[in-house]
Length: 231
Image (tube, rainbow, N blue to C red):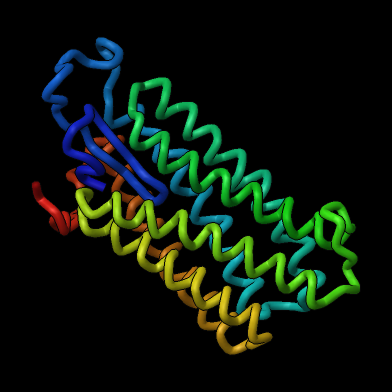
């Protein structure tokens, strides 16, 4: 992404590739002599976000058997998405990019909490038997609704970012909504559509990673679109 935010030195988001932007308060470089484009936490956060998103999308569309696919998806979500985004969060905080750390941290929390939640339901860690379908469905509904509210909050906050980020967050919102309704209504059709939207926001992540890597290697930034709110 070209300009993830307009008030900090350099920012990124999940699926971001921010470029240096002047800070009206502190114009000194974070680390003198360090190329900010090459020190972009999106170089870690975005590709791990994409990889895990593809894994989740494959599961939602029913690729391979559900049990076998879940056995592959959960480790990817924990050790690729979760740890990768947590590392990007620390990286962003280390270079004083609070908004970027916030975005990466929120998504790291989601990608870690989701597999832990699923494993807990499967093994009865949360006081719900795996055979109690109604209770498990209610728990899934609460989990998805809570995260839907959280990502909508992030979407609203992103309206001051370049449009590509808002588009990514909107797709995440709609995907979560579809998975929620697909879960409570036991609709594989809605879950499949949700999986397709997961691939869609993963594609935006690929675009943002290519931007971040390209800029870090000296290329011009890719178009990101104007923010919805400019003031």
